[in-house]
Image 1 (cartoon, rainbow, N blue to C red):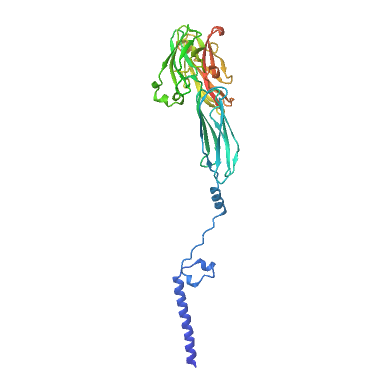
Image 2: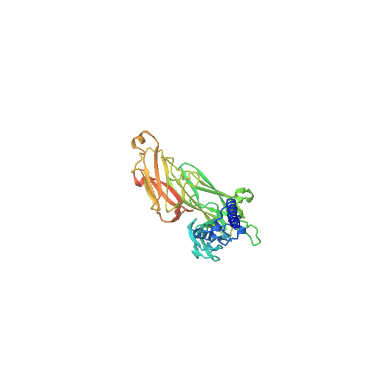
Length: 429
């Protein structure tokens, strides 16, 4: 009996020992798996195998950002340019309009805003400031060609919140013509002396056609010159074949049916100061029996020369400021080089007038002692279109449509010499 009990106890102890040993071996061989702590129902057959980790749920901020990224407006435009072609210039058809369309093919609302225009001769309206997905807005482009001649090419800008296309530029182009036109708005003589002979060349183009489409046989039948003592004009027939390749690329020249070369000669003896001459040219055209050549200029004498970075002393004799932002304004300067023995100060060289009257001009004179020792006087004119100036167009082409600065030189106002500088500019937003 004792032997039996001893055998049973030993067996039990051996069983515990074997079980403990097996368990210890398994615990050393098996890596800890956190899923056993979380998922109590995992089958033993999966113990020791790598369980797949559940996909991480995106945070709410990342999810919102992803959704915002997926939803955005997107611009779709079928047309950004419109060519109205060739239009015979007259009051009944100088104005025009054309609609452009912006479609939102995105998934979020699109906002539209006025981004500016290139010229005061244009304006536009946007039918909606906000476009929902799938909707369209109309951009109505209007233009006024009353002060335009020849090639018309202007643009407007619309701003959007499409991150891939933040602005859209629409353009309108065409050609305004009279049946007969001169290639320059004005024939300009600048800084000529009283005893100097000067000349300026120009071209005349005819656009008329016969009913069968062939060129109308245009002829110059006469020239009326109000002041033949000081002006001489010649106009000769030219061939379109003589146009250069650069000319042929111009829409103005590419439509020309008849071409003439002209020359205006300013003879010696013209008095000092500015002048304006209207020379009438007669033709055999039933539509345009005559047209006028506008000749302007200034006889300044040999005592004054004008120079400056923006001053065109080769052709037009204009101070070319061109486009000026109303927000920032623009400054420049010109120099008057005077060889007259006159001592220059605020009593002898002064600003007589400006147009428009908000152009600011300040003169700087050299020291009087230096002037006495030198035969040359250098007077600097600082010219400014101030920030905040009213919007306006002073681009010509006629003299009275330009800005202007008039200097007076001489001790006595009634006998002083006038120096006129035309100023070409436009104040834009």
